[in-house]
Length: 330
Image 1 (tube, rainbow, N blue to C red):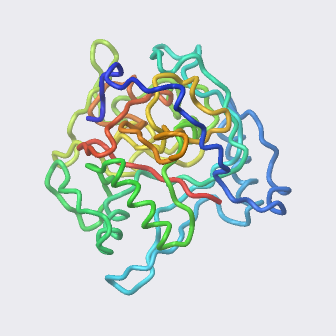
Image 2 (cartoon, rainbow, N blue to C red):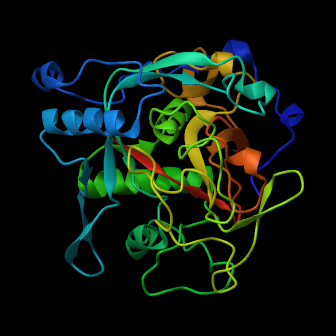
Image 3 (cartoon, helix red, strand yellow):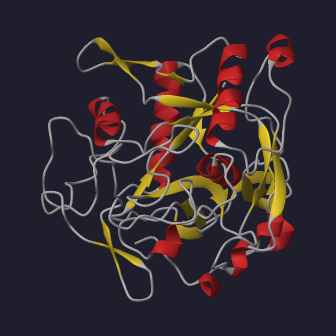
């Protein structure tokens, strides 16, 4: 599991820098038709989805879409992961007063503004998505599922993926589609997970342990109970999506984001961009060893899957409950 002792990583706050680059290349003409950036926290699902639909219409695309990937192996065109349009907006990042449990890293909450829309994969990247990159001899085969089943439909999230592996995948997908794919920033992930809600979970403050294939314990934690073919990880899209239409933002597999780990939420940029650690003033290459992971997994307690919760992993390490979700510039 991608969980570390926070004291083991003492980041140099002075060297944490804001990447400060626009995450989307929206044309000036298109931007004029986009909805005004609003503080969307506490909105109803219906109101969030209206904003999402208005944004997609202004971008002249559907809320849900696929780019095309050319497969060298089959000499055919195949679909890239299904992406969901996420509207621009402001929200409160971190653990707010409604949460029952807050970790030090999540406080105090800060307001972050995402000034341009972007797209997020509807689900965690699946085995089928990953296999296209494997077929191109770019990505590595990441081993069997926990139950040793490699299904024909590949409906499980890919796991045992390091942060470095994730970078290889998004670079490959960018090249194959001629669109800018990447990992989400830390703030983008939380913004997408909350989907206008100010609750602990994107489907409300109460996480249904039975629905999530977990069982309740005496301390109200949810622990994984194997129910599907002896496997610990569930197939994607088994449960209700959040208001944006994103599945499995809580549990199943941890999801890498772009950001270097830091010990304070106050280091987060107000514009939602990712952070890195500069090697020195003349070298902008990151010297991070640890990166942020989000969303929790099957192997953990309920509070680890709050929308505000963080963990971290070493960039070269892979774990049996660690996958990824991706973003795309619009």
